[in-house]
Every structure is written in structure tokens, then in C-alpha cells.
Image (tube, rainbow over all chains, first blue to last red; front, side, top):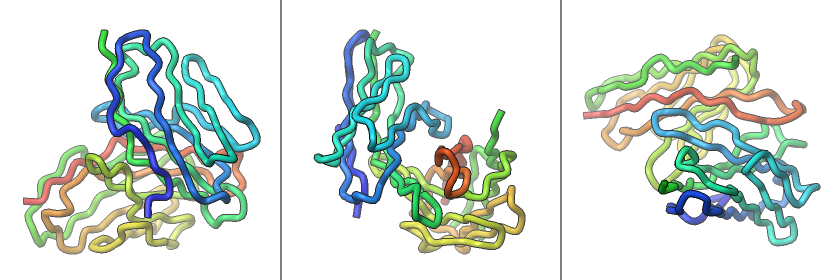
Length: 115
Length: 115
């Protein structure tokens, strides 16, 4: 069973647009929610992460919005650029009280930003 | 600069062969992971290890085994390769439970083709 559900599967926007990628989870024990970015031929790399005690986190043009009651979180990319074209994965983990803190990944969103 | 190194970028193996995928990390991380990545399915966890000689099954362990004889090295073994194991394989490592964050660092991946 998919622990983290991600949508859409693919997304195409014009340069300067604001793509939004959404994720939902069921397990209320999750307490760490990262987003990973993957370029072709590379492994995923951490982009930005949030904990459930805040509703929003910004790092440069990237923002995570978190809705604890709805068990949803989303990634917004402001003023998107062609260089942002990549696959984005949301994830979740249980940091406290678990034996490991393994990450549960969504299925990914392939973002294309046209110039 | 942190580094997770996978021994091969591309491999072609025959059905029934025993295949070894090697991964080495230089960050002194306790946790190491093997994922496979397939289009539309995202990252699926095969096996993980939280200490030397320790291993845990992930979500899709069938047809695979692992070995962790040294802290920095985690090997994935396909006992008898089959065509449905053609995929991109990603190794990752992360700090242990209780660390400030559980960021996972990924290698560049091994694209395995079984013919």
C-alpha cells in the first residue's frame, strides 16, 4: 500500500509559472517531510524539508505548504525556470521512536518548464 | 563533500546470472538503503541496513539479498537475474535515528539490463 500519494504524475508549465505538486499521507506518526529533486542521470538530492510543527517553509523559490489536519503537503516553485525541469519526489518518515527513520517516497512528478 | 559511490553506471547481464551491485559511502553513516526506480512507480525500497551485518527487508525484497560486512559498504545481490529485474538501482545512506535530520544521500544509480 502506497504510504505517500503524489500528484500529478507529470506537469508542464511556462517559464515564470508556479507549478504545484501535491502529496498526501495516512500515517500520523510521520514527522519529517522532505522533497527530493532528481535530474536525468543523477540520483535524487534533498531540496527542502518540513516538520509538522510549522505550516510553511521557504527556501529561495521553493516553498512547502503543510496541512496537518488534512494530512497533505505540497511543493510550490515560484518563478519557475527551465533549469527546474526535473523529477520531484515527496517523502515522509517517522524520525522519533522508529528503528531507522526510513523514507517512504511518492511516485514522483516529472516537471517540464518551457522557456 | 559527501559521497555515495556505486561501482557501475551501466550493467548488462544474462538471465540466470548472479549479479553484484556495490555501494560505498564516505560519510560514516549507519543507515544504508537499496532502491529500485521504475517509470511511474517511483522509488521502491528493496533492503536496508542500520548497522554492520544487520539487514531488514524493504517493500520488494523478493529475488534480492544484501551484504554489509563493513560500515561503508552495502552490496545488493541478485541471486539469479531475471528480465523483470531490469531497472535503475539506487543506493543511499543516511544518519542514524536521533540525528538532526534523516537526509538521505544517493548515489548516481546503476542501470541494469537483464537480457
